Length: 108
Image 1: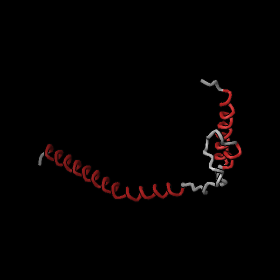
Image 2 (image 1 turned 90 degrees about the vertical axis):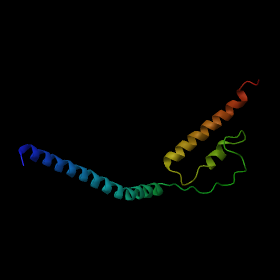
Image 3 (image 1 turned 135 degrees about the horizontal axis):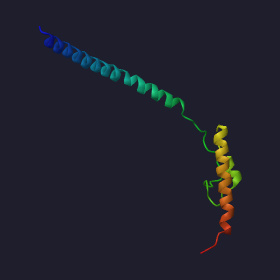
Image 4 (image 1 turned 90 degrees about the horizontal axis):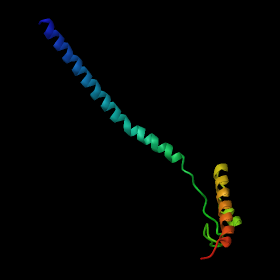
């Protein structure tokens, strides 16, 4: 075996080793992906928020002209976080301000 043949054989062995390493790595990655997906699903399930059923408030729809600030605030769930409660209160106050402006709008 001459020096040129030895270099070619060595290069072929390295090439074969790299191909096998890439194939093995791919198989390991594919085999581990279902466990990664189930772990991601478990994390999503723990973050679900469950609200209590709505109370009967006289059948007035949210945002309706007949809706009041008091009834809007009463629809905020008791289990809401501080941030959710603050956002809902601001939304109710904004709806109330819009309802007060409706009579002042020009009629066409």
